[in-house]
Length: 67
Image 1 (tube, rainbow, N blue to C red):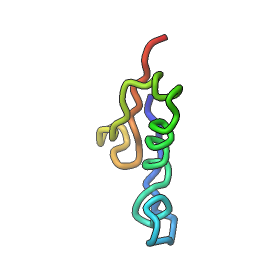
Image 2 (cartoon, one colour):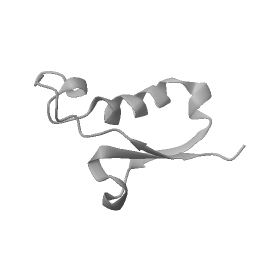
Image 3 (cartoon, helix red, strand yellow):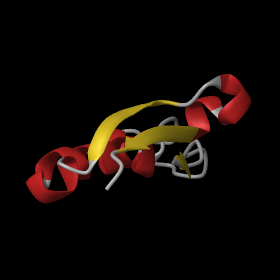
Image 4 (tube, rainbow, N blue to C red):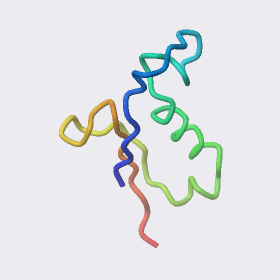
């Protein structure tokens, strides 16, 4: 599954990584949310940066287990 997160360039906050002007919220909060939920984590093989052709820094590649 390819999750398009965007790059977070519209925020003006420099103090918090999750809401900084350089880094997107979803890019960091989605993997953390997955790690924090054991039931959800069991359904996921991996969470990685997307290749440039798939969105690069503005996307996350989530590999799901087959059910």
